[in-house]
Amino acid sequence: MNFNDYRRHDATALAALVRAGKTTPLDLLVTALTRLQTVQPRLNPVARLLEKEAGAQIEAGVHGPFAGVPFLLKDAGHDVQGVPTSYGSRAIRTKAVQDSHYTQRCRGAGLVIFGKTNSPELALKGVTDPAAYGRTSNPWDPSRTPGGSSGGAAAAVAAGIVPMAGGGDGGGSIRIPAACCGLVGLRPSRGRISEGPGFGEVWLGCNSQGVITRSVRDSAAMLDILSGPEPGDPFVIAPPPASFAELAAQAPRRLKIGWSTASPIGTEVHPEAVEAVQRTLTLLRRLGHEVTEAAPEIDGATLAQTFLQMYFALIPAAIDQAVAQGARAADFEPLTRIMATLGRGQSAAQVVTVLEQWNGFARALGRYHQQFDLYLTPTLASPPVAHGTGDPPPLQMMVLKALRASGLLGLLSRLGLLDAAVAQIARDNLRHVPFTQLANVTGTPAISLPLHWTAEGLPLGVQFHGPHGSEGLLLQLAAELEQAQPWFERYPRE
Image 1 (cartoon, rainbow, N blue to C red):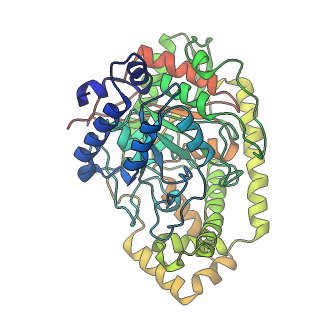
Image 2: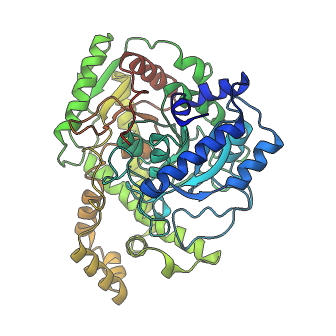
Image 3: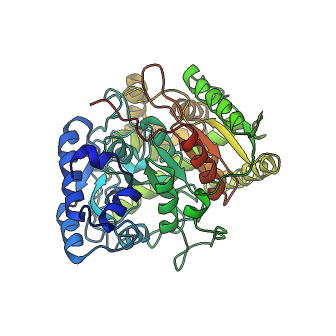
């Protein structure tokens, strides 16, 4: 199959072609690999190739709803037995002892897994620039980031290597790259997709696995494949009233949708991000939905700070676990080690307090959804940023490195003397992505849709946020918007 024909089909359509005998899994794999060879030097979306494994999978026979469709896993949380899951780090090289449940379900659906996509170290950033594998670039403008942490996945889909790819979302890591690359990114409810068998809940329940796609129907079909409990999962979420694919094919009822374009942490929101929401509001009104400017009664600055406290607190544990398996702490990136030192300065009581505050945010959001079916915001506070925009200033890094080397950084952190500095780091870290953490902290689903392109021709998604378990409703609205304002035929310029 030539590339132009390949790109004109989503995963659902490619699988239909295989079933009809109009193409073969091997032909699709060769097309995907050829496309990868073309764009890898310029965009660097793939960290690890599994070409031999994919060939063996095809030779053994592929079956299922997506039989023969090429697929890429994320190199974070998507384990393949006998292959390292490096989490974007040169320090982590331990081979996975078994497939993750996510990988098992992808294989069971017939997806042909031929590689793992690039991710920032420990999936900690909203950009994708690991020292281990190099920076990934945005297909719409290679001088800009594709977002993160599932940035390699989004770049691979936007560049036409695969019609969809695996991702994970612990603070916006599916929705941010989807918004940067003109794609669909659904973050499912906490517990919808198993994190096992290696994990129960990742990032204290903030993370959800999922996919980045070009079509709503692919997102719905993959949620059917990936969702459902596995033995030992922490809890079981109620199943939908019908399959997600069936729900997505049904028109939504007329909805009450609240919206806001104000940054919850008080930072600037780019006019293009505001315009993205305003254009979406016009479309929603035309479709008969009721829209009202209203945000949940949540202190966004406090939510952001507690999110970063959790984020810092988990890094030392991740490093300690890697070291216990043979990694060297010195092989982690300098910024990762600095954040780990800050994390070690937090007490257990502080972490427990964070979790108690998260319960308050979830209750407030629950009250909001008693009045509004969904909540609309920009996904990003600005168009995709230029490479290096989110890096700490060189002087700040120099000071932090010196403090860490002297041992003063940990001491000052334990004494609470860096609280103001950490708050500023949190504000700086999230200023381009202040809208996504609400879903992670509260465990609720949210979806980014490619409904806006800037005057420069860059994609800029909008986000719909729903109550726990409302993926079906989000997919219904997404499908209606996709039909009203199609995006599938929009491609990056070569």
